[in-house]
Length: 337
Image (cartoon, rainbow, N blue to C red):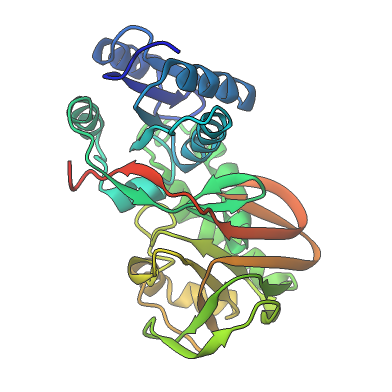
């Protein structure tokens, strides 16, 4: 193993809109030679992970959104544990589209803020233990099926068009594409098609929450059906945000350390659309909004459904298993740094 115990590895997603040649050059001047890694594919991500573990970096920063973080944390953690090594401490640079986890940790939003984060964290990496959810073999802060997966598809469709508009493309943020795609494509599509049919079975410890986020009723038994029927989304998360500061999981802040949030949105898409501001703020409440603290749940879909993991499309599946990973990762806390 190489000795880079005092170095920071920076991994950038070469496909992210904000990761330009100019930005890469700026980063290259900030970090020491050989500490900057550029990944544009899953194969490259695995190669980078092997190199980082082999060289023994104590801190790894990812830039390119939640999806980049998910891929790198999964690959690096698995390789480190395969070698019986302690995984490094992870941090995020806010360079991707959704950046839900970066919102949670208070990472810098501007380009100057990103560089300030990098400069500071090279010398100070105060961290906290953080639990991730294992979904289809990936370690992620959030995942789901239904509204979010469809919304991501529509977002990518709109962004590909917006990027090429001469009067808007360079100035448009990811939030602009979301603001266009959700009300014009996602909500109407959900309103016109049959809602997703899902059966959610509890496979671990779980408890239901009331509309104030307080546990109520007896614990949910293993093997018990938590929900069965039609909904527009079934989601899991250990963080409050779903990108751009949207508080889809308002009870995540108070969850027990050994639970994640499960939220089933069984309301109508038009009702959600009419309350979009309260959805954004995390104050949306409805009797058909089911919230649970859980540690292991299994989703069974009547028909193959699109799922998303960490904000990236993850294919079509008849089922999805979400389990809280037993080993926390060390995650840089910008507020504490």
